[in-house]
Image (cartoon, rainbow, N blue to C red; front, side):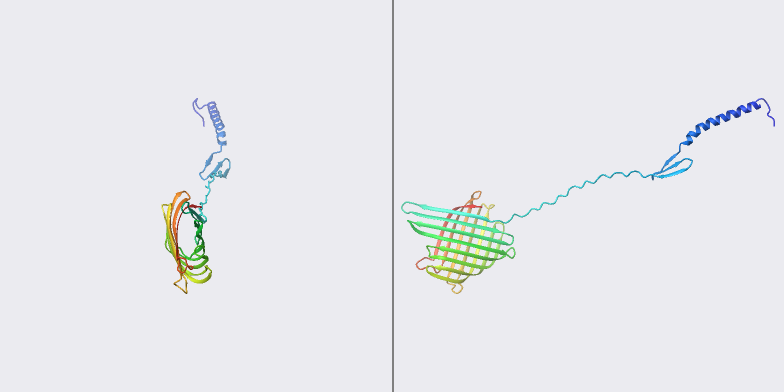
Length: 300
């Protein structure tokens, strides 16, 4: 086959081939560096696939995010408030009356009372003394003391044990000891008001004049107290009767009624009346002794 014309001359053909070959070489020169760069596909499940002349599959595990350390607030234990420890509440009262002139007289009194209350028990202790004289002759000489323990079976019911002693030099009571026990009941038991009844058997040991006597007795008693205006004032009253079991006509009656008003802090003024009745006094003496006392009290 023969090419016709000048354009298809062999020399022209060779030049065209060289030109195509040159373009192809230039294209390959640019193509080879580009093909050397491996395409990378990153998947959302963190798998990287690298494609070169061979395939490499790499499982890439990213570093775990550091979780902020939980801050635990310190736990503060609830503060336990303990009830106040039971203690003795005491009151001491003193009073004196002195006269000089047409009559010389002296009357002095002292009284101590203490009480302690716990959830299950109540304790009462008391002592008092009186001494008086007129124109140098003693006309009052008494010493008295008592103690009582109440054990609560319930908020209102309780059992009690009581001991009491008395000396009255003017009434010729050399000594009188009374021991009783029994049951008590609070008819009223409130913060500021209490009213209780007590009853039980007992024994009396006494020397009246020059006669010693011991006999069984029954005790019937009541006691009342009411406080006003946050303990700024109070009134109280108590009474007991102790008949002789085999001779009910022979009996003792002891009672007291009083009022107290605060003066300043722990100081207060007390006025009370004591009445002691003995149906069978010593020969030549009256059955009834009444004493009116006023004095200043200190609480501690």
